Length: 516
Image 1 (cartoon, rainbow, N blue to C red):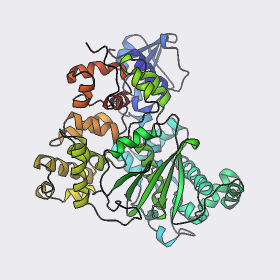
Image 2: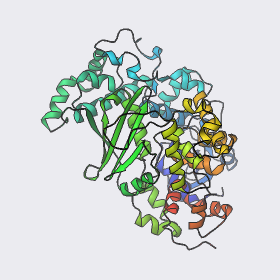
Image 3: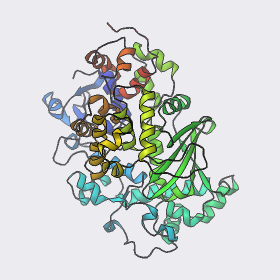
Image 4: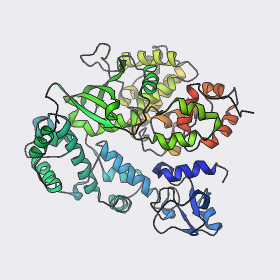
């Protein structure tokens, strides 16, 4: 194994499913080798050996772990990617994109107590069921159920129920939404089912739970919007994150005002706006959103967690990167750095294409023209916030000349249209949890998209923590004007957190030592 063993041990101790199948860990004290997501007790670093493949581990006389079953790691068995897929299912449930199939529970016949506006998938496009996600991997929904049960210890229907009830508790505590709206916003198909599930799990009716929350200063007063909190692990460099986003705001779609982030939102057939402010005393972001978005609340909150990188472990990441003298000073000065994600993968990818070989400011100007000309208009009470980002379907039907008329060169116009057609057709998915290597290969196959663009999209839209756009001019300049090959060599000790190292390099705050 040529990679830095300290980096691999760091990835191993994080138990991050994104590294499953990337390497294997042999434990000399037991003679067993594991996947990096194994739940067994973490051995000492001195007792670990790292391998590129299961075959290499077995050649070194290690036996496969019976708990994590290395043969099921991504790409190493006919039935592979089990752990990653289980977590992907959970993530898509969080985002409201997956519902259990009808075989998993009662048929949604009549929806008791359902509001008129909620009669069709709570106002959003029909969620992708287990059958659809299984089809992405060439499996059956039965295999998906077995994977979720084995990897997470619960059935898909139990996973869905828990996620929905936790969101319902938050809505009951933090908002004044009527109980019926809470039921549908958290994903239940009827008020009766919501009441039964809540009573069965928590031993009290939702109305009684809300009264208890009110008694301790819970729900906010009703109005045209509602407010929720999204928590994070401190420290959190909110000003730094906001500066990055502000320099790249999409005119009409996004704004940064008085230390807050605002944007328009379109999810399914639901439109509205959000206002996000930092509440450091609560270790949370405060999200104000329009009531029109409550039917797509799980999807909205999931996207915001990705946009602001709220699931990061800053302690683990900083400890690892600070071990390299090249980044130590930057890490010390930039505590709580986050990698800004993407609210929408297509929106981010268009920005990446427009940003090829030009400045951030120039790319932002072009992106603003693109949104103004091709995005739908929307009304909000906020000045300068009146546009929706153009959808893939809209752009897939656009001509090269129409896009080129905005001052965008024809080669990039062709790239944007090709990208839009791949996403609109479902052949390409740019969302957190997508397999990075496969997705980057798909991107590079499109006209006008190279490795820099693919890695940038993987970093922000796919949330891949080890992306590294080594061809980036600013990155190489801040490393002392090195070549891309040298930048790749210097980056090895930073793995598996090279996306975060890239942000430090873009800030220009590294110590120019050890570059020879």
